[in-house]
Length: 389
Image (tube, rainbow, N blue to C red; front, top):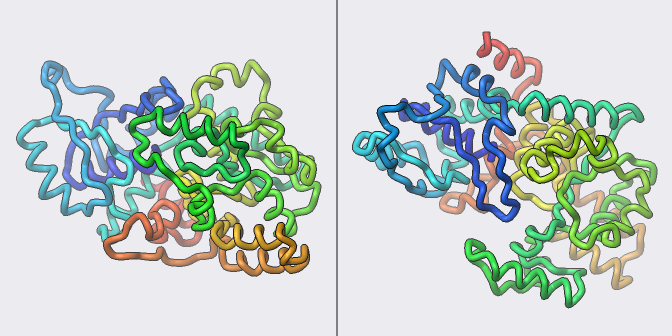
């Protein structure tokens, strides 16, 4: 969501267009009815971008009877696509509604000023609502009272497993349930999935059990305070048993906030995710079990804040090592050594993005490593502050 908004603001600026406050998707699996203003501070969004893009809350009255042209921009497009293909349509129809905005702007090859605008929107204009910010800060303060803490972004929710087809460690009954769910959603295009093949290719989230082994192998002590950022874990407490046994100092948002504080968020998954986002960005160490969009955007945000440590798990090699260990072909000490060596260069060190011409899905994601915007953290914050004055 954040990335898509940043991209569309950048497109609007490049084409010198007025932007209407974004509508949010309410048709996804979670069916979250939240509007933009329920998650983000609308006034701040409009005001902070006033010198770049004119943002309005709704279409002017003169367009009220006009049905806008609805279309999906081509994925991973350069700014030239929008200039040559989209701007003529805007001139003709006056109003265009983009029905899909995920990954519609290229990672690389854009002018530096546009790349920096993407960062400005993400790290300055997109501020959460005061109520979300207040609860997020309360959670962070509570976690800080006992020292440092780790955030484990444990992507093991039912929708993730059904969509990805990753069922390693699931029972036959669970596998059948997840398969039925995948077939029930027509917009999930891939239906026949070889779970084990996909796992060995590193394309599945680590299971809670696998994640437990990795955390131990990396050397995290038993008393490490671990905040789990996720929705409802598929399989419930039973699936978290091994993790809780090895790391009993597990914390979730329900343990940090009262029922009254959480009540308004319960049926709003995007607002709950916003709380997890704030805690994830503030953590001492961030560890995602899968490299989904939220994990990537959090990683980039942490780089921007001063290259705070994110451990980018190499799932393909990890599952090979886990299988060797569980088949007793590796001792525990050999397994630990291999896991540590594997991740020595995967701690969010400063680096350039990997560019693969013609394969944008395979190259590094702009929002995971917006190196065009990175430098001394104090200078970056001063520059953003200067744009507000």
